[in-house]
Length: 297
Image 1 (cartoon, rainbow, N blue to C red):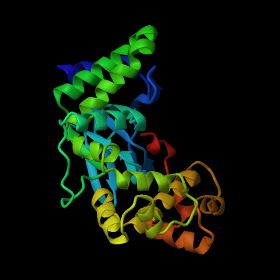
Image 2: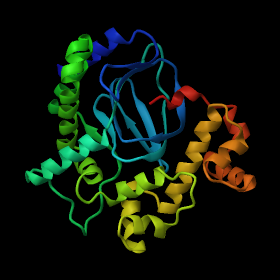
Image 3: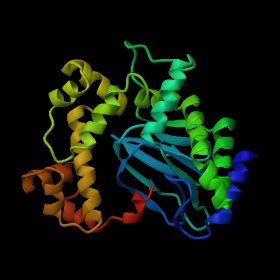
Image 4: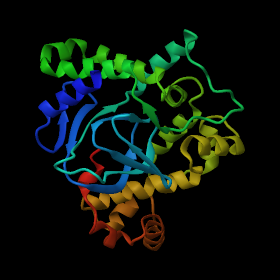
């Protein structure tokens, strides 16, 4: 019943394709009516909840297809591909994108751990992945509905927006994606901090030792835990971040050589070679077949 109310709200407020801002910072509604094949994105911490249609994300070759049964939770910056291959006018993709504010998520995660309500992953066990699918539960659905209903009143949004968003964050931390989110924002968030460090220095040549030192880990331990959380080695992750960033810039109209330089490549031939290895085509040929709107979510 709650999920149906959310769907009805989106259908009433999204009559055309595109993205609509709500009055709450970081919360957006979207409608897609054209098939969009997967294209490079860099997911920042967010939750994507679908109420109609299906969406796909691809991380390191693994496909995550989700619909109204599961929402996607990305708890740290991740290079991926995203699209809506099955969207059509008769079967539109309807959903909500909720950015995860680091400060609020961290406060909540630490409060939960202090209260003894969170189960920490044993140090010897594998880390939860930074990109995961979680089943809708009633707590999440009700919190999302209350948040969206604020859009009907600017006054309510101004007064209650932050508290309703905090309630939704709490539902995420308590739900199936909770292990991943708590590990990224709470105690033991070394990998998330390393990725944030990497993301804030995209054009610098950072080694595994640099990243491991930044979070106080040995090289071997850092490498193992990083791959558990992201499915990629640190070097592979750095390369994917840079190539995805360059691909986005190229799709937006930037020249290939300039895009390569802006993400830290000094050799055009190396950039072309690594780009073709990842995307299957040289950058100039690849750019001709891309749909920029596929990056909207």
